[in-house]
Image 1 (tube, one colour):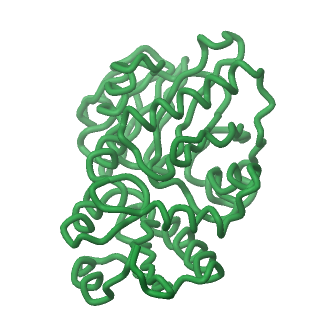
Image 2 (tube, one colour):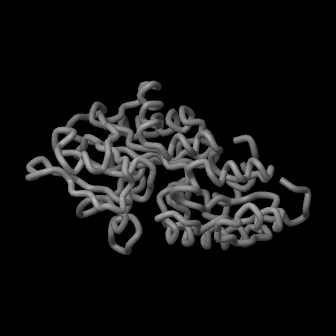
Image 3 (tube, rainbow, N blue to C red):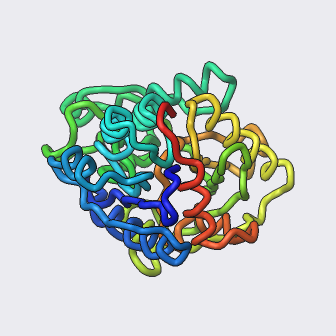
Amino acid sequence: MSSRATPKVVVLMGGISFEREVSLSSGRECAAALRSEGYDVTELDAGPDVALRLSELCPDVVFNALHGRWGEDGCVQGILEWLKIPYTHSGVLASALAMDKQKSKAAYRAAGLPVVDSLLADRREISKSHLLEPPYVVKPNNEGSSCGIYFVHEFANGPAQLHDDLPDQMMVEQYVKGRELTTTVMGDQALDVTEIVTDGWYDYDAKYKDGGSYHVVPANIPDGITEACLEYARRAHRVLGCRGVSRTDFRWDDTKGLSGLYLLETNTQPGMTPTSLSPEQAAKQGISFGAFCRWMVEDASCLR
């Protein structure tokens, strides 16, 4: 952090991924919160000239509020390392690893964390035949916010017919029935467990549209499952090499106890509006949204 009386923070937001609108929402909320905490804040909609704009602005810290590809997959982190500008959240390697669902699952499995079976396949092959026994889920290997997800139920007449605008390589993953749980890690502290309740699939609309879902925090689950979620999230954070704040998502089949708990993925750039999952968990620990954002700025560094 600079010795300036009022540290200068650039909030990176927007970008060019499918999650642009979510990122703009996160960025505006974080910028407002950081101004209330006394920082000199500039909002920067990240485009092809992002390196030039950052060089011109000369911030003390970049608050990374980008979501999706190019913003949380190691790309912008590499630019920030090159420019030697301290930044929030995870570094190049952890960001790239967490964004690649199949590679991150291999890391979890090597660390003894429970994951479901999955494979990568060409989009056209997936549409020809069942590559896993139904039920299963088809999703992009490197996108977030539940973009481009297909659910093939147990009695489906045929495989998923995927849109041509999806990536050529997709993940096919065994479906686990049960409850959606998530845990935020802040530094080395796992904050809480939230249950996400929806009427159907937890897709993009369920995540971001009014009434699409609601959160129960702390989740009404047995103590043993709570402790397992907290421990698994801490371990996932460490295994991937995450820094700052991450959020790990779980699926729990409550008819099977602990053996029904599976780790799905770790998000290195969780949503950052005051009602998003991670800030909501922080608030339950007595950490205001402004203080949560301030902690991330104070935690910022290069060589993450």
